[in-house]
Length: 198
Image: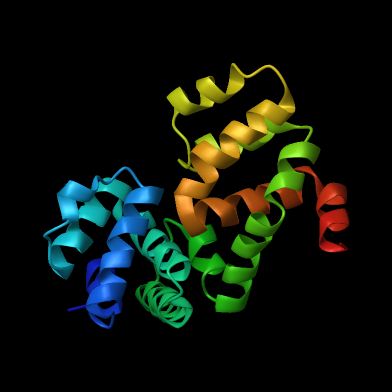
């Protein structure tokens, strides 16, 4: 029987010390809509189930890896992403091709996410075509139509990007950052080249 995303998340969290697991819970609640009271007394399996139910099975591994990185467990995050990519490839999953290819190599996975983190302020200030980005994110289900409309009500591109980055991309974890990176490469290649050269 193939191992599920939940199995891989449980394995990753099982290696954490009690102190690191507590830090993981706190950071998870900061970056998702999971309330601390919902997981405070939960064991690893309960925490995993809550992540999957709140963040969807497709995004659960990426979000877990992002939180692991945030608490300094970089190796655990990379192993989790590697194993998930390997399992997805072995099963021949096709429904989420772009995310599978994005985590097939840990170096490209982390570099895209880290790029967005590093250049967050510049992206807010320099992106001039926000609507195509929102269209793509809506199509890929990174944002819903309610958030799409909320961002659109902002007056300037800078305000739209600020809301997008702080309300969607940062809380969305690795997958959201990687999707944004790929969309920007397509929509604003010259700006991206300039940022890469800095």
